[in-house]
Length: 489
Image (cartoon, rainbow, N blue to C red; front, side, top):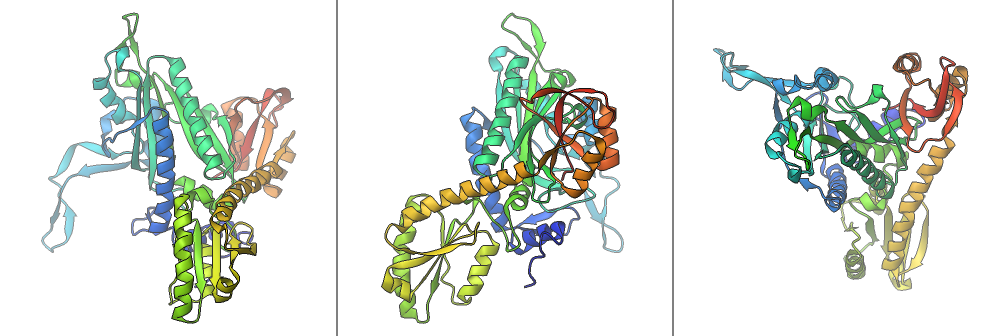
């Protein structure tokens, strides 16, 4: 099989090669969509399990809402429909038939009375539903999450990062007060940041989006932003304070404790399979995936080296006991005893797939009571005793998790620069890509001007941002704080 191109040579091609050759996903017959293969989906399943537990710990429950949304629902919230209008897939008919030549055609007599939108997000249909669920403050809060697929018709697609159909979760909550809704928005942002840093080993900047970059229909959008190895930013999760916009659009009122009618306060928040793209781009190398142990489908692979069946039986007896000890610690193990592949080919395969720890063991190791222990992140290996190996591997996995995070954090810190004038700003974008901290005059016009001229966007206004007097890099007008710019995915 042809190797993976170097990421220094062509980062975009390196990424695509890696997704396909590591068996994560492949392109589908439908342009812009992808087939997530078992190995890639098992990473998503691990992400789902962890996040689902975090949601439930914070009081949320799962539900499911329809894939199809009546077009009229989108007309009720003007900024929302404007934000998604160009990305919507529309169902107009409900039946096919054969024509005179036997070809399958859309039956022109089966036109829907009202077109249906395949959900790009579910605020409209959920708030139409909540109207029947909410009458009193006693019905609040509603804390609901949905695991689903959505469709946003994309012209330029990239596996996991931007596809026309993708998998995600979307939380939709309803509250009696603005303060409760804002607290929910901030809480869920912190859940996402915790997950990114402690599970994906991905350091993130917590911040707010500018009005230009907010979610369509939101009063405030919070986000976590990460830096990929090519110096581009990636939005890794968002949490939105929707105010009363959707409650007013769908007439969702409730009786307050003071027996007055008021509109409900709302939030929504979500992360998607884009996180798999973030995982790949932030940690992997030219040899393949580098997966943080907490999300690796296989955490340890054991490769026996043998010439005869008797040697394999002897090794297998030891591996059976080792596997039992590792599984008791919650560690997933693969014993690769295939006789169709040579050890070198197995090493290369599991390196490509990013298995954090590899154990190689041969007849001489059995005689000496040793194994060869290799770690994927640093590609280092050592010969160690079999005694206490399960404990050693458990500690090694923890070390790899922290090491991957620290490497990514150091990279981000080394590639975050300040710019005080426009020429330096443009030079950094072209020559030293990464996050650029710079002053901005706070206007949408200047933000759009910078984007048009440089392709850089304001990724966020960091939370707890230091207040300092300065001048906007583009207009020279006064500014009270720096914001974070970058070119982004």
